[in-house]
Image (cartoon, rainbow, N blue to C red; front, side, top):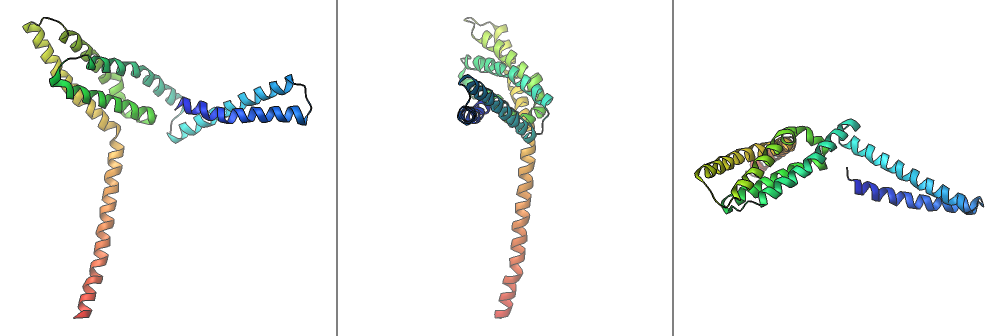
Length: 221
């Protein structure tokens, strides 16, 4: 849920409400200055609170979530954000041209999973393996790889460790790609369904037009 949008909408409604309450209480009821100010302040706070509650209710209803589910998802997304930042920082600190594309792809995929689940929180349940396991592994491996690759002198044992870590990161990247596919699986299935419907419609249209054309030719003969 976009807290900035909630704040802006709430203020757009609260400020005119507060002004209206002040004008009514001051001029219509001929009250002293302090009471209209207090009433307008209270009216503004009440309208802001009601607007926030309504927006949150509509948001939860739209995404088919309960309050407890949304709190659970938001908590995990808040914990994941600094992990993704650490992952990006570690990946950018690795001075290895040959693995640049791999690292850019990993950054892109992790950011995509996070942005999708933040925009549509219900997708979180399809990405739990990413948030509870694969993201932590990626952060730990990448930070260790960055640290070891930054050492000024390399030994045979260190080179071997770097090679094995890099291979493991490649395998983990493939796993995280599967996490992304899991998150968008419903969208893929829906698209395939729409394609099948469109193909069936086009086929039916062609079949309905063909007999007419054949009949016209027979009449001409």
